[in-house]
Image (cartoon, rainbow, N blue to C red; front, side):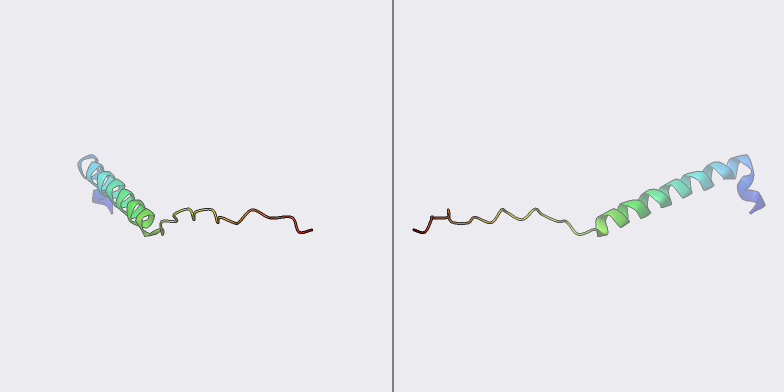
Length: 50
């Protein structure tokens, strides 16, 4: 863990962490089901009964 805090390696560790976070969030976002809005139900116009 000590080697990851020295300047040359720390940049690489930071970039790898960013890439992992980006790919994990992208993958998690792609798992959500796509909800398409349902078309409004068409009802017949109400006819007043006499």
